Length: 520
Image 1: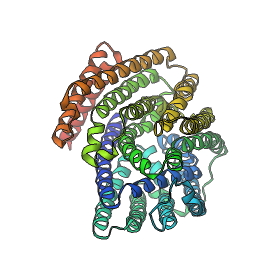
Image 2 (image 1 turned 45 degrees about the horizontal axis):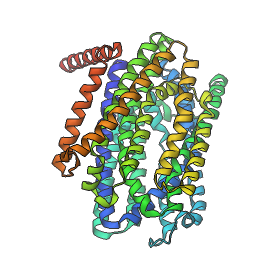
Image 3 (image 1 turned 180 degrees about the vertical axis):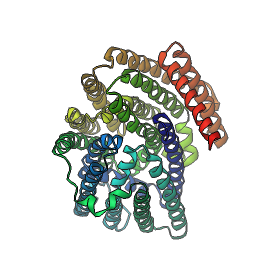
Image 4 (image 1 turned 90 degrees about the horizontal axis):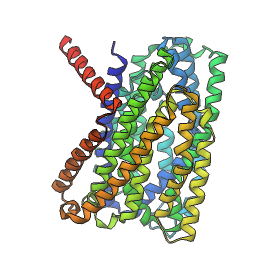
């Protein structure tokens, strides 16, 4: 049986490669989409996505709460409890899918009210309903994904998604090029989503045959587990409501106050940053189940060392990736879809800062999730969302900041709420992790990142090579800056215990993996 470390490496590697493939597919699709349909359709697609983010409040984060309940029975091979929880999960997600479709259909009658100027897109209500149907369809059988992740087999889901994303990309591009119809684009999306979920069902049927017996449908969950799930669900509901408001309103505000054209530009940048964040999230989320398993089996012993080792890795990813993206993003946008879609330097820096902070928070968030601290974070996201919404609306209405308003609104809410609330929850609940050590390392990282941003801006102004946008130049810019900032991060951590621990652990894991391959 694979060790916890090997499972984490397998899941992280698969998640990274899989998300990279999905990222490439998204970029190819969006490139053809922009060339064939134009910026207005791109803006509409971004607006639809934001509205669906808001409508997905029906999910309410229940999945994460129930997934946490699976960690212990999976570690103990308690098949009856696993079956009972999954049966509950199945019923809830079927209700969620239906709820999203009903709410989305109702909302479709008001879709044009969120567009600043008259749109030339015909039948926009029907197109939005198709978009909603795809989202609703994604919930059927999707509950199985959480079981695979909780059982440290998330790589199965990643491979499944990569296969069907590739199929979807080929079909959507082909139909766009031949028919130039957004409706066909959406229909293909629905069919591929449904096919991917059916395939996932068949894979889990083989991996967990005990879930699909008549006996499993009649097993009752113990009152103690139900009590824990209920408490976590309440916390998850509050968190989810806050998150969807915080993340789901930017395009709505921009579309209402400025128009679909700026939404199209902003969406292009968000595709880059969200795709990069999804890659990181996939890698981080794939080890949460291992963190939870570690905590359950060792009852918290050695958790401080694990946390700071993990934090070192997350901080390194946040620092290196944000620095590289800042070097190449404007050049990449110019090469990819044209200079028309490039946003100003201040806007780009603000987006980078928000992205960097969000990535750096993942170490704390992962441990909060692994410990099921949903109840303790119940008000954080709601307060953050309220501040975000008020700040964004005030800035866009009473200033001339334009698109910067929504980014600053997000930054203000993160700084004044999340940056201190999340560590407070974790370090209050998990006593053996040093808050002072965490603060010192985090403030050091912010200092390094701030100076690196100034350094990059200086270098981009000084050297013409960093302003060129050919595919060869951008590739060289990315590789060179990646190497430079990685070496710099290693250099500033040369005396770090965490760096030595991570490198040592990585070497041992690679050695074990080679031995495992030779045995087979």
